[in-house]
Length: 203
Image (cartoon, rainbow, N blue to C red; front, side):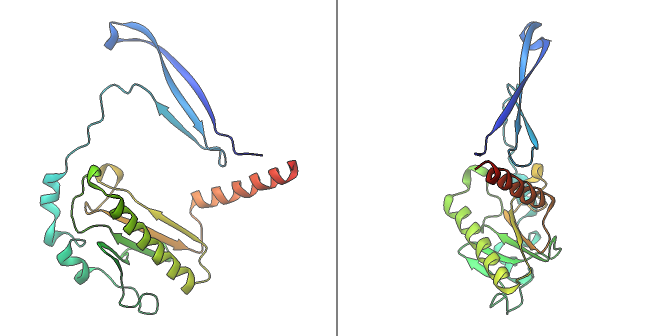
């Protein structure tokens, strides 16, 4: 039984003041996750174009001595891993630096400081910068799994800039590892097993 991707279209009819009160049908597309059944809604013709905000002023206000991830601070004020996990206390992969989260969300929780640059505009991210950061995150995960055989669930999480809930402007990602799954991991695991069992019965 192959995974199938399903969508459903709905149309809302109304008089549009932007088109001289013309009666229009505007479409919404509902897409279904094939494993969990959760849905996402895609909106078409949103109207105004999306223009990314420039955070240059905020960057000036928060960089340097005010930022724990800037070059002059990161090796001085960020925490270190125990040497038995990471010799020297931190992973370093060019600009990417991996260290413990002061306020962990999980049994194992690292932060990957991605770049020396405090504010990186979305279009300024390079493949190398992203690849180095995720390689460093993966290196940390491998060490954790080798160190702690009770850990089963891992995730790499990245939210960037204030609209995403990012609390620090300096680009960074979170790496979590735990004995317990997140809600999403639990749902994916349960539904994946169910999908596999159904496929086995059919074949």
